[in-house]
Length: 120
Image (cartoon, rainbow, N blue to C red; front, side):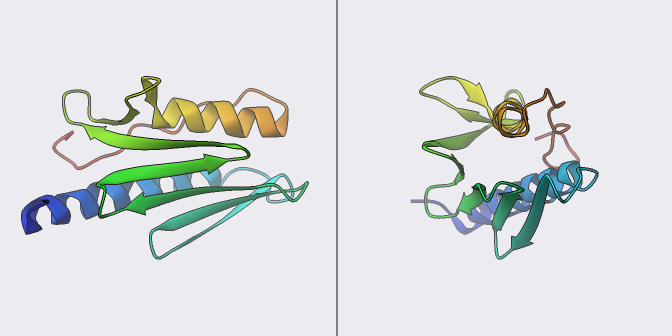
């Protein structure tokens, strides 16, 4: 079971991740991809009506990304300071750049790394 300290650390990391992704999305043309962030859920809405969702799953201690017919569950990797999906060994920022870029039909740079100020 997750301790209160672990849960608080998770919420700090998860919120930093969500806010970092929102900041990454800010410069995009809102006619191509718009977003909203509320209550630990970041929703991306594309011009063609497609919707992707990135959200925190506090009970599991994970960040979940749903993009089209695909979904991934990312755990915090303290050794690298990134959210990593263990089954496919995918990093969240790279996965976001891949799926958003594919939806927009162009290459996009991944969001900058996020986490706490101590790098962890």
